[in-house]
Amino acid sequence: MQMISSEPMIADQKQTLHILMVEDDKYYFEYVRQLLLRRTKPRFELCWANSLQAAAEYLQEHETPDAILLDLNLPDGQGLLSLGKLKENSDNCPIIILTGSTDDSLGLRAVSLGAHDYLVKQSLGNDSLVRCIRYAIERRRSEEQSQRLAAIQDFVATLAHDLKIPMIGANKLFDALLAGNAGELTPAQTTLMLALKESNANQLVLVQRLLEIYRYEVGTADPSFVAIDLPNFTEKLIATAFADSNVKIRLDDRLPDKKRIIRGDEEAMDRLLKNLISNAITYSPPGQPITITLSAHVGKISIAVHNHGEPIPREIRNNLFQKFWHGVPGKRYVAHTGLGLYLCQRIVELHRGRILCHSTAEEGTIITVVLPSGSKN
Image (cartoon, rainbow, N blue to C red):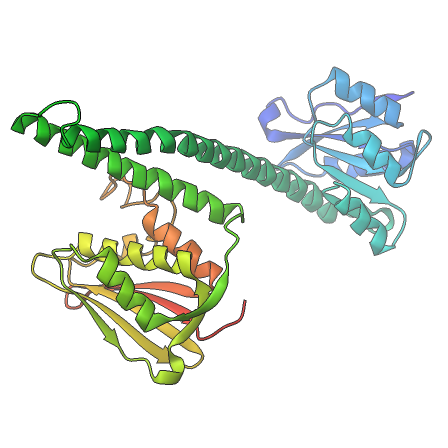
C-alpha cells in the first residue's frame, strides 16, 4: 500500500477542494496533480491512493473528500467492480471515473451504477478535469438538497395525515355540542363554539390540501382520465358547491357543440375549479359577480375565471403559482400557505395544460386554464 498527499495549496481550507485520486500509476497521478496545481480559484489538495484498500483506509481515517477520481483497473479491483467496492466506503462522495477506454457505453454503465461522471484519460485536460470535478460536486449537493426536501415532504405528509383524523373528530364534537347533546349552550357559548368550529374547519382544509399536494408531488395521485362535458360539469359544480355563496357566479359558455369535451380526471378537475372559484370569491369586491368563460381555440379549450378585485402587482404575478409563496419579502410579504394556486398548477400540468394570470386595474384579475381539447392521456 502506498499513500501520497500533495502539500496544502493555501491556508484557508474553505477555498480548497479536497480530492482523492485512486490510481495505481504514480506518474499519471503526478500529471493530474500538475494540472490541478495550475488552478487558484478554487485551489485543489490532491491525495493519492494506489489501491482500493489504500482508498478505504484513507476514507476511514480522514474526512470525506469533496470528490474522488477513480481508475477502474487497479491491483485489487477490476472494471466496474471497483466502483461498487469504493462506494461502500465513500459516504456518498461524488465519484468520477478515469478510464483508458473510449467506449461510451462503459462510461454510461458507470453513471448508471452511481458514478457522477467519467473522463477518458487520453483526452484529459485542465479545463475538462476541473469542470468535471466542480459539476460533480454541485450535482451531489443538488441531490442532497433534493433528498432533504423529499424527507421534509414525507414528514409534512405524515404530520398532515396524523392531524386529519382528530380534526375530523373535533368537527363532529363541535356539531354534537351545538346540537345540545351535552346540555343547552348559552348564546355566548354558541358563538364561541361556532368560531372554534370554523377555525378547525379552515385548518382541516389546509391539512387536506397538503395531502393532495403530496399525492401530486410524489406521483401517487393515480388519475383516471375520462371524457368530461366541460360546460355541464362546470354548471353542476357551481350549483352544488357554491349554492350558498353571496357572490353571483355567471357561466359564459362559448363552446361550440363539437368542442365541449376534454379528457380529464373528474376529481382533479373538481378540485381545480373549486380552488379557482373560491379564490376569485375571496378577492372579489362586494356586489361584483364572478364570471367563468369557456371558449375554444385550435386544439384547446380555455377556462377563464374573472373577478373585479384589486389588481395583482407584476412582482406577485411572477410567483403566483409557487408553493408556500405569497407577497414580496420586505414589501408585501405576509404569512400565508400559498398552496391553493400551486395545487391548481400541479393539476393543470397533470392534464398537460397551462395556467396563466392577467390582472389590471381596469379589468380586474383573470386566471385562465388552457387544456387540450379531447386529448388522450
